[in-house]
Amino acid sequence: MEPRDGAWWDSLRIGIGPPLLKTEHGWLLIYHGVKETVVGAIYRVGLALLDLDEPSRVLRRADEWVFAPTEPYERNGDVPNAIFPCGLIHDRERGELRLYYGAADTSICVATASYDEVLATVRAG
Image (tube, rainbow, N blue to C red; front, side, top):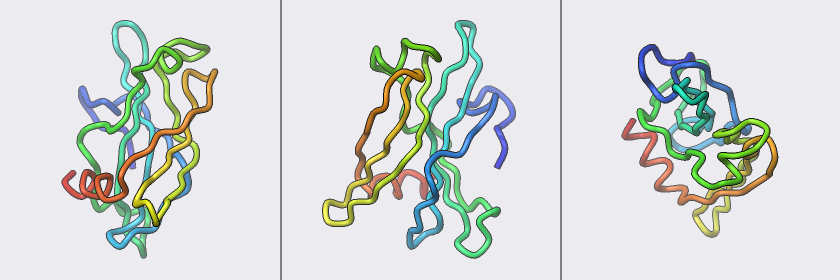
């Protein structure tokens, strides 16, 4: 997978996040994408589904980012406007994903989302 050409939110560079999560629809890839703006780079989080047998093949890629720096601890720090997904836990009992991420290179945080909603988002991509 490569950065997208043009004015996409992940057009400057991309980086892999936590280890892939096996789902019934493919490997869930959570990654960060970077876009250069007039005030500097902004790092956001996106989703893709990879083929279970051939993970180098991208099945779906969500067009829009799903998570962006909005809080002061995500926007101000050593690397401003940056969130880096690092770890992922799938809590099957709750139907929840917990994403551990670095914020502005100064904080470690956790965000939660519905497993079903995340899959629906990337499958619609």
